[in-house]
Length: 406
Image (cartoon, rainbow, N blue to C red):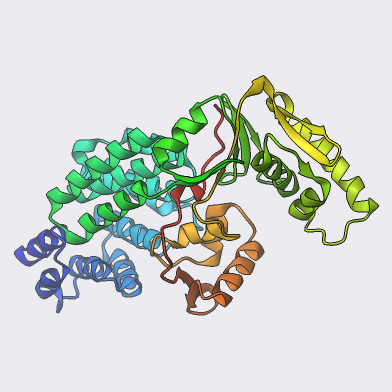
């Protein structure tokens, strides 16, 4: 490797893409093209970067497997930034294996961090954590180490584990400071501010207040029957009843929980669950059926009793009841939570990350665009969506995560 290539690579590691370009801007050999692609990625021209890295990968000879693998890893990182998470990234797995076989521990570890980062985006937390735990910390460069700690913090936040999240953010800050890269330091600082922002809103009949992640964790660990509107479930003492795919049942239990220990009239329940404006016997019959289904789903956690005017929630064991809601109620809060990371998302990537149909996402994006809360650019498969500036920061608890099992 000649001195200009070495100098350009060093500049890129230090977060100085302009100096790197000065060294290799006029060269067309594969190493120079690959470094130009990496520099363009750091400057934000991701499409050009992708083209250059693909060109370099094709130009490397059959004996340069390590160089081709590095190009594939860099291209995978660009795909993550572009939120192109539809593919399972088999190329990244193959590239990581190739780097390991050829002793390139630093880039092998970086590829592993990228795999964990993608898994975090689509809510596969156990797999992401398994990959992070298998990485060799000493093999990660400081910039990759900071990113890995941010992934660890994201996993802890979505699992509602405040102390591990805080510790991971602290380690990410130290690693970012060691790099001296201002953009990375700023990214960690943004993540820390998001962690300190309100994570949820507590609703009871007597109070309404914002909660931090520590308070959310304490509430879930308490004896309270929690109706969790962020995840669409009911939980108490480690037992969880998922209702995210039963919107009518969840609307009923939330209305009952917000009024507890009082009851809720049949008219209000019909309006909340069915959006019925004019009530007839058909609606009342359906309400009785859905209340029966809700009793069955809640099982030992609670019962629903009929009163003279409506129904009342009766938790087992005389435990208190509370509702956890998003800090700001929004019909499309989960979509906004993903768009809030500042990157441009395709509708298909949003559908994959939230485990819903593409048509559901397209309707949500159309409504957000009509309300002036989201913007799109590009057409067809190249269309991407971003969030317009809005007050506050959507909570990370709205992002995808597996249901807790206790």
